[in-house]
Image (spheres, rainbow, N blue to C red):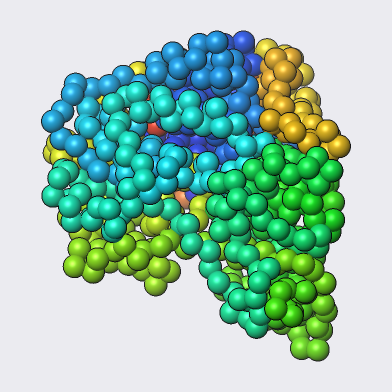
Length: 621
C-alpha cells in the first residue's frame, strides 16, 4: 500500500474540523458544543452567534449540514449540534433574560460610511446581507413586497417550529444596527431596478423562489388542486382553505413542506379543536424537500381525515430528511413510494389521483429522469390535491435592458464566488440565484454578497468568507473532557411533545434541559484538537501505534510514501485523521513527549493564531 502525502497547511487543518467546513457560514460548531459541555454557555452563544445573525432561528430550523459531517458518527450517531445551538440561545440569546445584549455583542460596527446599498428581499439572504453591510458601516435599505419582513422564514416555516417572537426579535436586532426597512414595495411595480441602481452604490437581489412549479398532467387545473407555495402563503396570511377530508400531496421534497407546515399552523389556530391533529417542530430542511410532508401535515390539521404523500422516490431516494418522513408517519400520514402522477380525476372538482409505478427516478449519470411502468394505474380517491414539486423565482419584474443574464433554470446567473451578476454593481443570492436551498445557505449568500459589495465600494481586499473586520474575536474556549465516559455516551434524544399533546402548543420540539445539553455536548470529539508531532523527539517506538483504539497510527517504510525520497532504509509515522477520536492515549503513551494535542483555530470567525510546532508534511497521510 502506498500513502498520498498531504501538506499540513491551513486548508488541511480546516478540513479536519468537518462540522465547521460543512456549515455554509463556517460556524465553529465543535467549539460552542465543547463550551456547553464545560458549562460556558455565554462563550458557546457568542461562538454560534458571530458568523450568523440568526442563531435562535437556526437553533430550531437549520438543516444542520454540520451534523451530517460530524465525525462522531464513526462511533455511533452525530452530535445534536442544532439542538445544542438552541440551548445556547435559550441560555444567552434574544429569548433569554439578556434580550439582545449578547446578540449585539457578536458584532462590532466599523465607522459610519456615506454609501447606501439597496437590498431587494427581506428574507434570510437579504437580511444577512444587510446585517454585514451595516457592520461594515454602510446604510442598507431593504425593500420587500410583503407587509412583514422575514420572507420564507415567516411565510414558509410554521410557528409551531419557529416562534414568531424569536423571528421578530432577531430581525429587530438587525434593524437596530441601522438597517432601513421598506415594506409593501414591489420591484418592477413600485420601484424599478434601474432606479435603485441610480440611487445606491450597489444592489443585492434576494427575492427568493415564491412561484410553484406546475405539473403538466390532465386535471391539474381543476378546482381542489393547490400548489404548495400558494397554499402556504394563503394560510400563513390567515385565509381559510377548504381541503375536504381526503388529501393527496404529490412530491418527495422539503422546502414547500415548510411552507405547507406554516399554512397548517395558521389555519389550526382558527379551526375547531376537533379538526386539529397536532403540530411539530423540526429542522428546516432543504428548500426542495419540506413542501411535501409539511403540506400533508397541514392538511391533517385542517380537518382532513386521510392524508397521503405520493413520492416518485423510494424512501432512501427522497430528498426529504428521514426525520421529516418519520414525523409525518407518526402523525398518521401515509407515504407511498415509487408512485408518479398520471392524471388528476375531476368532476368539476378533484376526486382522485391516478398514479403509475415508477421504474426509475434517476438515470445512470444521476440526473433526474423518471420512468414509469405501463398498465400499473392505481387511483387514490381524494377531495384535494396539493402539488409540491418544486419552486422557482418570479423574474417577471426583470427588464431585459438591465443586462442581467438568466439561466436555463430560470434563475439569475451569478459568479458563484462573488455573487456578481452580469450587470455592474448588481449582486444576487439565495433562491433567486441558486433555486430553493437551505436557510443556512441563504444566510451564507447574504454574507458573501455583503463582503463582495464592500470590496466593490471600498476597494479593500477581504476574504468573502470572513466576517467584517470589526467583528469581535472568537472566544478562546478552554476545553477538556468533562466526563470520562464521553466516548460511550449515546446521543441524547431531543425532547418533544408526544403526538397527542401537540394541539395548541407554541412549540412541539421542547429543547434540551441543562443536564441533557451538558451530556450531549460531552459527546463531542473536539476535532479542533490535533495530534502534534515533534519529529526531533520521535524514536519510532510504536507505542502510540499499539495503543490507538481506532488504528489511526501506523509506522510504514518510507518507500511506501509517494513523493518522499530516502537515501536508505527508513520508516515514517503516519496519522490518519478521519477515524481519530482525540482520545489522546497516544500522547499519554509517548515516552519522549514527541506527541501532544494542539488546538487549531479554524477559519471563519476564529482569530488567526500561530500553529503549534508540528511535524512536516511527511509526518501525515
